[in-house]
Length: 508
Image 1 (cartoon, rainbow, N blue to C red):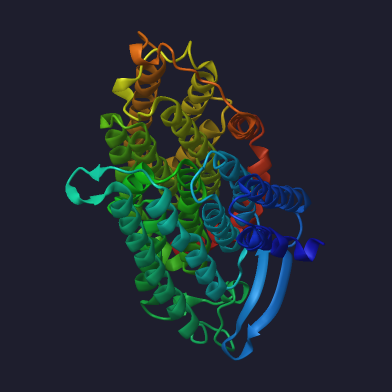
Image 2 (image 1 turned 90 degrees about the vertical axis):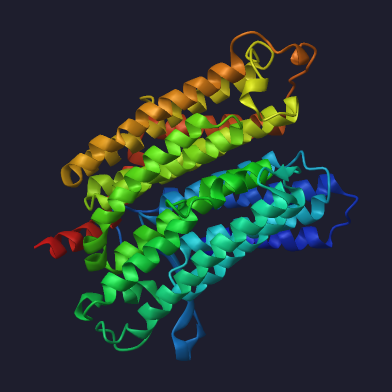
């Protein structure tokens, strides 16, 4: 069972999508049940893998490997280490949460859940693939259905500067163009690693990550200094790196609630994971050359994203720009080039995935009940909607880094790590924390406090069980990992050590 756990993790949503495709359209409850069962299996497998991982054991665990195209050294190779393990757990949690958040979908339910489950399978495969070719396949599987999910089930309305196209059409097109640009650059970078693997010391060309980890691309003059920024930008596009972030706010503004949860919760993290795993992990000399420059970009991400969030009135735009800012913290931790900063970056990816999924879920519920995302049109909702108010306040406090919440641990570790290598940048970046507190507290005040908007005087704010379960579940996860951060730090640091030691080798 252990050797096939990751395969089941990937196949559960795929099989769910296959079963749903054969179900009659007139059975929405059965369709939702199959999707729910698929998400439940994913969560169970992710917990089992997380609990079964031994930090003191071999780096790569739960491995399974089969040749696919032996002549090209392409194989179905899966496994996890301390870097991918938190992302596997995050995927399991958010996959089920997104399915529950989708129970309110009324139109074309069958097609919707098929596409949603395909996205979840692609994300799951991306985090556990140890073959670069298969990673690209899973990346495309995660990205392409998003276009249809936004284009068909997204928000209607005209884009402010493009009267000829609906918001969802424009946003879906912009998102897929950016993600496909990132995918194309990833393919070029991976193909370069494949072609030069022999010159880097291997006996054969390969796409296998474990074998490539033994190669030394520093022996090839100029190779890492060219390919590293290519991969960093490629994955940075996926992660909302400035100035390639513009697809993110538009995409979230039009996306259905569950798609926003997955976009911000796990697809952005595929970008951060790719930078850590492939760009820095395989090309440490290129990373050492470029990361100080990208540290500057990280600070721009933090400040620019927070400032833009402060200026928004649409609640989904506020959360989307906050994601740009918080992913800047991930980039800053990576640029620190030490194990404390990298642990913080990995913790931030997990923590932000939970927090932002929670906030997008609540933004969707607010819109569903009030039919408005404009924070200026709300006010005084706390007495009418205590569940929404309480959970949004908790999520907001976690986002601004309140102690005992997961966001505090992630930011503390990241900034402490950055202080040792990027002291000036770290001090400037702390201004982003002030801006974050401002836009979070102002949003809470405008939506939930003050005089009640009269149009909501007779509004009912009841919540079926599935809305409460996934929201409360995310709150619990956020608090548990804030109180017990060793759940991530203990598994992460053994795998981060080799990469950080490679950085220090470059410094000597």
